[in-house]
Every structure is written in structure tokens, then in C-alpha cells.
Length: 226
Image (cartoon, rainbow, N blue to C red; front, side, top):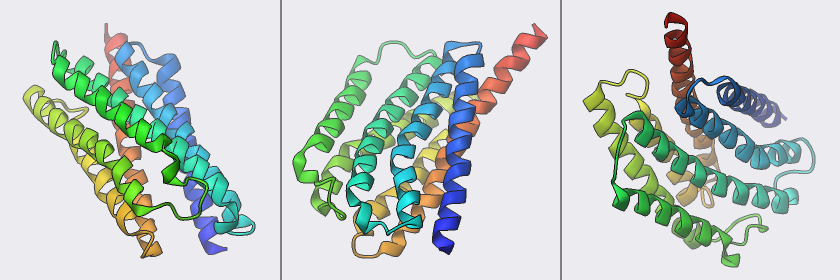
């Protein structure tokens, strides 16, 4: 019961913040860049809800294993939406720093996204089972991790060059999110307690949304000043 209470409170606060902040930026944003950040936040919250809501229900009722199918489907949907999340973040980087060309980099990000989604669609993932095969967990997360590394590097380069006060910590947030997520992929099957790392991983995503919110507030101040 304590786990159910703690997780439910945390998830409600997280999902509520992500979706409300995202919708605010999406509907009230004055620039395409802010609206992209809003859409990214809404996608994050909506995608995670497919996994977190069934998980909360399972914790309050008959347990996680009894709801393996619903949790697996939610995990599958979240895997897809997170892939799109990083693709949007890549385009935010392009627009924020006025990046032109770089067709090879764009093609790489799209290619990794398609590979990741294709791997997620393989039946060998056994999404409906309580524990999915580790080998396919590693396979489907390999292109995802490469996407993350690319985003870390490109944001680190351009944010430093531009002395960007809004996104200067984006590389850190992305690095932390993957740093907490990958041990869960690799070891949660053997050591379930490792799953607690999903909490700081989620907080890293909250940090990313807060950067988008700072962009939103900054753009509104500029409009009022003008």
C-alpha cells in the first residue's frame, strides 16, 4: 500500500504537470519553437500515461503481474512516443540555433527513429508478458540510446557556442535521463529494486519541460516588452 500511494501521488503530479504545461505552451505559445516544446511535453505526458495509469491501477488492485498485458501495451506505446519525443527535440535544436543543412544528421535521426520503432513492433518483444526478453530490450534501446547521445552532443555544442541560458542544461538532463533509464533496462529483471531509478529518470524529463517553460515565459516577456 505505501508503494501504491507514493507512486500514484508522484505519477499524478508528473502527468498533470507535463500535460498542463505542454497544453499551455502549445495553445498560448507565440512562436513555432515554443509550440514545439509544448507538443513535446504533451506527447511525453500522454505517452507515459498509457503505462503509468495501468501501473497505478495494478498496484491498487491485484498486483503488477496480474495486469501484465495492459502494462506491456502501455510500455510499447511509451517506447514509440519517447522516440518521437527525441525527434521533436532534435528539430527544436535546429530551430533554436538556426541550423541549416546537416542532411546527414537529419537522416541519421530519422533512420534511428524508424529502426527503433521497427524493433519495437517485433513480436519477439513479447510485450504482453510480465517480463520481456532482455536481448530485445537491449536491441530496441540501442538506436534510442544513440539518438540520445546525438542530442546530448549537439545541444552541448550549440548551447555553449550561443551562451544559451534557456537550454544550457539540456545535455545534462538528457544524459541523466538515459543514465537512470539504461540500468533499468539491463538489470531490473534480475534486481527489481533497480526500477526505482525510473523516478529520477522522470525528474530529468520534468527538468526538460521546465526548460521549455522557461522558453515560453521568456518569449512572453519579449512580446510584452515590444
